Image (tube, rainbow over all chains, first blue to last red; front, side):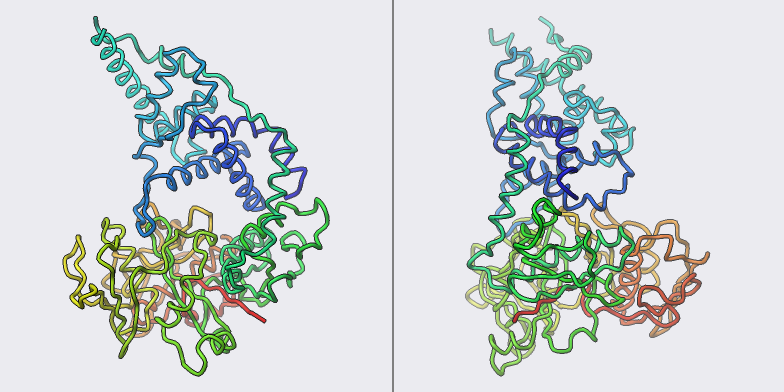
Length: 177
Length: 406
């Protein structure tokens, strides 16, 4: 691993991976820290990278693991408790305020973004990868270590869940008026 | 008014229309932070004795082992630390060496240096023998050392790790006394930088530990949380079993001497230390290091059953150590388990680390039933220091690390 590899990885993927992280954890400083951790892990494992997956999906899979570790650490976990953190079934909710860039969007988008927190971790991950990062089904499957079928099913359930939650909220808002 | 403003297309279109969020830092800023970390981390933490720096080698060792495997070179899971400041790579492989502090060329292998320093491992050197890829500790390696085993944890999994402490260090810490597992634990456990090694912060246990007549007594404070959930309870019990495996039994008591009451099981019965009748699988931590661990709470009736189970993952957390495609028959006598591959097994067809892991998991699994294990129908009769015409050597501890302190 040398400097030129860092420069290449940065040029090709840095902004995409950063965007993925900030949409997930909502906070710019935390995203910078996590990005740093991504590089550390990439450098650690770079010589072992076999090219079975693309460099892009490999980087995203590392970023995904880094983010999950972040959520695991910030989930209430007392020092001597080692309860397993199942990111797929638990929600990946950051307590941070929404990013500035999202706060400037229209109400519908803000509502949609915040409703994502109510989805399960696997659904949120798939939505971010498929729609925010524009990864293909195959790429998403590669990042998550799933089958393409599981990605499709999870995406379908995520959209359905978002639709139901959004309509419920919209209905509540209308009724309240 | 119907609540159907949102449909799938509507949502999908909106999701596709979120703005790009960029990292505003320059490439140089990002890079310099990585580089800065190197400089900062070169200074050892003042409260960490050299011992703990050496412990960090567990992580590094597995890392380097994996890197070396990529290059087709025997790799080591055991390293020697020459002193607190300086390291040299005995293997002489520049691509895998961790550079000597202050001597690395600017811009050369910076990332690798960064990684080494981040792990608080000032320098490491590779064990150059032909058995370097082994992860376990073997009897012949114990001469001149005292073995300190401890059950470290990650993701509610307990990983047994053994450290070889030089006799000189033991003499300094204990004088003429021969320390038992509790003595070793009380002396060293609190100094282990578990997080730095890639594990969860778990040790030392709350309360007081003592050992008398072979019985370990753990007196717990009232507010302990080892029974917070079944996972907590299982980790607690398994880690006790792995850490005090020289004890006849382990009793857990309240301050008043009564058996500790656990939510999941009520008053705790004395615990038997030895982890027996289980198969040994591979477990990869979040940090990417792979260890051998017993399939806790999944006992098998016979060694044959346990070894037959090794080519299929028993859970999402554990990985099989024999390739799923490998077919084999298992027979056993009162002292020997024989694994006969249906088709010739070629160790050249799998990665070196996987091959070693397979052999060590077979030996450890057979050992869990008090038996040896021997392979039949392998392409190689001798591979990577293993004489496959004989029963496999049995590791004393599944995962090992060593340190030398001057």
